Length: 217
Image (tube, rainbow, N blue to C red; front, side, top):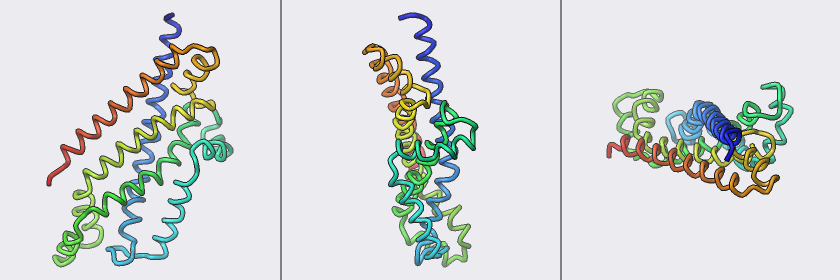
């Protein structure tokens, strides 16, 4: 294999990591608070707002219902307005982030569902405010579940980034299609798949480690 091809593989790998990192960080910063809000605004919870909860639930469900490839094409005008182009890694990071936000929000909400309601009731009986309950009870107790949610999201973003590459997003998906599929080079396809598998294994192992470290039960 030529040095030029090795450089292309390295560049594509870094592009994929860049897309996953950018979209992962932004979706976590938005998705985790959204998941908490979905939980605490339910009827009977510490910040019960049924109307707000219903609206957030509908928006989140709509976001999760749209297949990524359709979402990527549908928001091209928004992507172009935001980053100035509809192709490349920066452009691909926009739909990746939008797709990941509702995904991680529901996973975080699910993690909060696992918390013993008695802990919240005990905090309320001691006069804790809703925000104190969120910061000192809900988030610490759900920490392991949140790390699991982040891990699942990152792994999903790796596969989404490969899909984005197939339609001009750059990264390993683009490399596999252009140099593997279109040029009938199965070696490049196998290398692309192998790198993606290693990425997923690495992120999953890191996530499992963080979950174990955060488990205080």
